[in-house]
Picture (cartoon, rainbow, N blue to C red):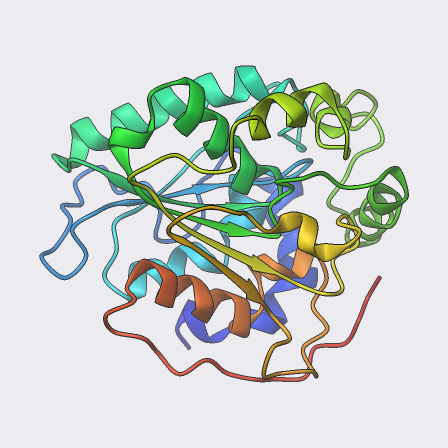
Length: 281
């Protein structure tokens, strides 16, 4: 069975195996530095993981799906010590420097002029700082955010998220003691006020946001959405009320990930499945 057919079954087992045993190992299909983008998919795709996650946890389903659909896929870790399981906890500004360096490495290796970025949670919002303040817009064609914390989450929202990750065995108590990025993502933070000042977007970049009504972090879930030109905001449940995916599940479930494929290649859209996904929050 190909990895891109696993979708829903991948979440519980992968959370334990991928984060505990190999948090610094790229997911299947990622980081083939000899990969050259095709005419059909001329831009490499860089996956940006979320808070308290890592490249393997967030990419274990999405990376092979993209690879099997003909993309050059690249992943990396940011915002935490190498030996820590849970990354994305240091300041977002510092993490953005890591993203900038990695994008440059991908462009040099592949010979491409631009990349597409797909990020979950903080990983859908860190690129916006890169685009706005680190001259990233010239190097990025499309940014796709899965539950991105663009306008902030709530303290009460982080609590069920942490509980869920603990249940999956994906979060270590030691690793999650300090999380500067968590406070930066709270609605009303100085960081978000600075990031969103003067508008949510920058010219020349195509934006897609995929949000769920059942996102535990965002309250309301429309806090994920962006305003501005060349923005497509998608509510996961539009046309499929039985998909109750929460924040974490957006990187594993077939409906959300097919929407990612269509955002990256809007000229050749794939049928978007509607499958029952129970609410786990």
